[in-house]
Image 1: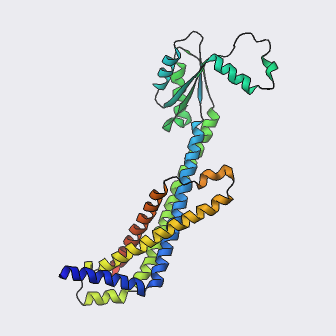
Image 2 (image 1 turned 60 degrees about the vertical axis):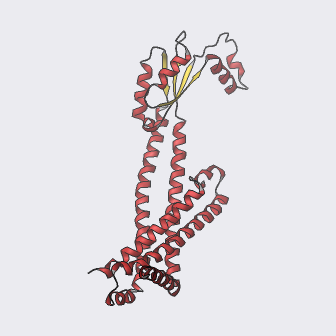
Image 3 (image 1 turned 135 degrees about the vertical axis):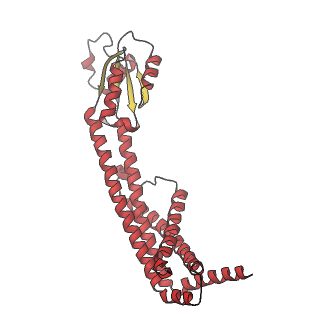
Length: 295
């Protein structure tokens, strides 16, 4: 009975406080929502940009030309796929190579006039993935290919690989720096906003301590308030992010559409934002109270 009464009192007190301090509560929720939306936009842009750069890196190909009279194409393909870092190997026959060349020369077919036999070699178009996209690792794959008896020649665009590798490294470094800065700024703004709300009730906290209320009894209403404020902040962040994406998507050129795509399912984004809001709201409330609860 006593426990139920205490719980009812605590919940009622928390709701009363939220009503009486509605302006501060709204300010905290909006600040939390804006901060979370800024951070979530950064995450979306980074994930989308990183995925786009990686897809450009996937276009990096190694072409291994096959000697005439070599072993069966399937055995060659299996040998290539056994090399660490290789993600795909596509056999291109002499006939297919000639057909593709004719398509590329459409309108200039006279270049091939007088060519009786097919001069093009068969080849294997190879893609690498993961850590093997950097120039040094690609070179090890190329060296392995050159050691294979069927390989006539091996070619790859080293300059393209170096540019992609450098761009990825720069983006990752910039993302770490900006992510740390934004996270620190978000925590600072939220904690200070919530601290103002706690300061506004410091007299109430001191009176509760004077009448013998335990630290836990004092903390629980603020915990509930933090949950409510955090939940509201998460919903606000979700609305700001969704509205912002809709408005920006209408103005972004088609070739930049990938930047404003949602990299995760909407329910996952909603749960993540609301959970982050609740976590920050609770943490901010309890941490900001620490100075008043010191023995």
